[in-house]
Amino acid sequence: MGVTGGIAAYKSLDVLRILQRHGHGVSVVMTHTAERFVGSASFAALSGREVGTHLFGDAGQPGYHHLDVNDGMDLMLVAPASANTISQMAMGASSSLLTSCYLAFRGPVVVAPAMNTGMWLHPATARNIAALRADGVHMVDPETGLLADGAVGPGRLAEPSAIVAAVEAVLGGTSPANDLAGVRVLISAGGTREPIDAVRYVGNRSSGRMGWALAAAARDRGAEVVVVQANVDLPRQVGIRYTDAPTAAAMRDACRSEFPACDVLIMCAAVADFRPVSATDGKIDKAASDTLTVAMERTSDILAELAALRDEQVLIGFAAEHGPPGLDRARAKRTRKAVDIVVHNDAAVDGAAFEGPDNVVTIIGPGDSETSLPRMPKRACAERIFDAALPLVHARAVSA
Image (cartoon, rainbow, N blue to C red):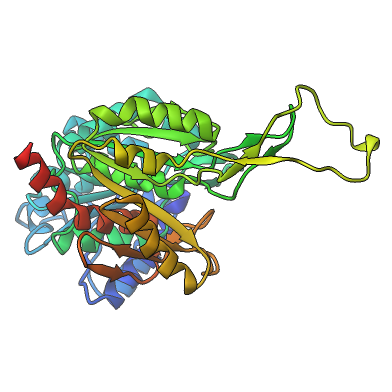
């Protein structure tokens, strides 16, 4: 495990402990800047192993230290990965023990970036991230939240549990392996807002995080990804094309436009079931009455409409339900809408679904299969969904 400089370095201690609890042996390599935030003695005490910090090892000792460190290792994890280290890795520079180990390592590599929002959004960082992805590096994208400098935005290190899940997915052979190369994936994400007047709307609690996780997973597995998004307050990701669709009507139009060119459709967005029959042009004056009655009408069933237009596409729907009875409704939804897979999302679990980082889902289909997953990060859920859909995707690609 490589640890680079940044306030998030302290979280690497948690990553190390979780990896150990899962039965993994971990050796740590630190940059000199990382030592200014967390001492090497902490990692040595927890890992029970010597911590590498110097490119040439101890003075007077023979050997090639950056090669010796790699001996017997199955995977390299860099968490946190600073903008500087990511830049060096992308360019093939080897000015530290960590970057030299990276160049000499021949196994899978997982990188979890962490940095200031401005640095993460800079075009140079985007180019470096894209270059590492092209080299086969597995990325654990940073989260959006409160950063050490007081700013709120993308760049916060992913949660240790999510990082460990990514590592174990790679070690278990279930991580992205370009198995969606040449596949065009269309994903809807977020929650639509149906206007009541110029400032008020009917909406829902969807954050778009699950759709974002699906898009990143599809991209990392080699797919061409289009996201039709409704009111998502998350940073847009490199290598993904986005279309804005704030209302149910706009989402219907955008999805119908993009659908003929896609191979896989995932309707993850929380589309309003009802909308006001008419919206007031200005703002309704609350002083005019103590009550407000809003006449509502049904919106279009986008997934059912697209299912009727399908031409070999694989169709995946989501069903956000509340509690055990919702699973039966999700099964019925799959049959009613004639789709291949429905993902039942249990919104009754505290801290999961909607704004939370985790989900508890049951994957219904394809065929008679049904898989209930324990609570896990949304990115891990996304990988399992694509794993379930992959046989269908490949079978229909061959028949086409």
